[in-house]
Length: 301
Length: 323
Image 1 (cartoon, each protein chain N blue to C red):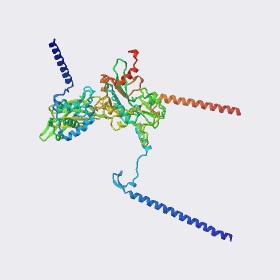
Image 2: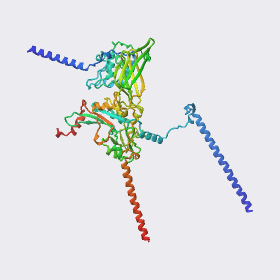
Image 3: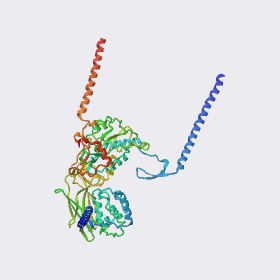
Image 4: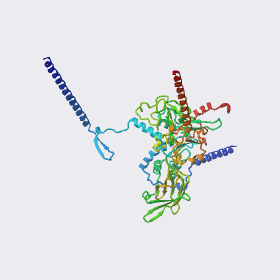
């Protein structure tokens, strides 16, 4: 009887532990291997941490609270962790960067709201709470980004945009292999991404299918932004005008005749009905005056 | 004799008048000269020199007192703003998409809007409503601004052309023209309009401010006010106050002509047509033929249950006998 009880207790404890483990596991981030190993090209120091603190205060503090004080919002599910604790500090820089980029559940993505530099600086601030942290710098050489050239060719038959990305090194022209390429179209409030981010092949070539129904300006011109991110050459961005959109020149919404529009744009039926009523009543009044005058003349005679 | 006697008298009067005239004119001249001298001295005494860039791109240094301010008068500014406000931004057709599945009743949109347009707490250009169709369906929150109809009933009934539709789709009110008849409030099927029953909050501070038709500030007692799609912000390339203030990514805003809308929280830009297609977008009360410019995405995954005070309120409104 006593033994059975112990057994039951053990099973229950084991079950609880297992469930707890599952719960923890559910909160883990699934970061792709290539993103995990990404490193910052900015050297983390006191200055970057200070700049990062300002970014953290503005964008992260409202949920995560002050670092080291564990005073984030507790009512949220999952609760935003104190980022100075082991749970976060165990992650690689690449993983933290990925989390900032994608977001999950209540945590928004900061990909479009913070620049890459700002995102790394925020991570620098988080790392400043970890004494054991040793930074691994990426191989990126920021001075080399000037050497990169992006050649674009648009094939109007297949509606494909072919990008050839090369670096003009002293030793000769080298194609950028396995570099991340994203294609955007500039819109009024931001950049619209076309397809997903892809990687260049061995010849430094990336091909995008451009949508056939994307509106351009009056003549069909579209501002296309190409963003290349390479481990060695860093980030390169170029904006070009292409005549590949649908010419869009729509009239203003007040062009058509409508009952709510200005007088000049009133519907014909209103203009005709109103004018005819005014004319009829006017003519009738004139007729009455004319008749009265006639009666007076008759009286005088 | 008498004539002789009279003559010198006449002479002396003429002389007297002549003399008085000379003295008078002289003293006036002298006085004005002294006054001019004092004024000149006053000007010189300030001694502040300022740099002025001429239209010919020449940088000149002149005395501050020699410079006259060439600015538009208040009336001219008002006319310019009113003209600009009627014309809108060419080539645009603004649209808003409200994703109800993301709204958690944070009410940041409302406070940002009330702050920008100087509204009283009970006045709403945008309101977050508590929704529950029946007792067994999960509740949700719904943000409701002016729908900026392409066939606006409010504009049709305005007797003084105070409220109008712009070519870029925004429906605005010119409070300088509004006579406060409130026909538009009665005509609006979405209850989007509010009336200024009391003096506006910052009436004293804004006394000398030029009225901006794209912001409805300063508000005016006895006139109607409503959501403006933040027409002043759009001109600067920024998204509306409510859209930028939302912490939960509820709002998308953009240009229908560009077929793109941008999320106010994540700043992610997506195709407008795809967003509606993939998420079953709809408009409010389409049967009225108002053709609204605000689109809604259905409230799926209703993960934000009513807060306690809202629960009590909902119980009052739901028909208990029906359950």
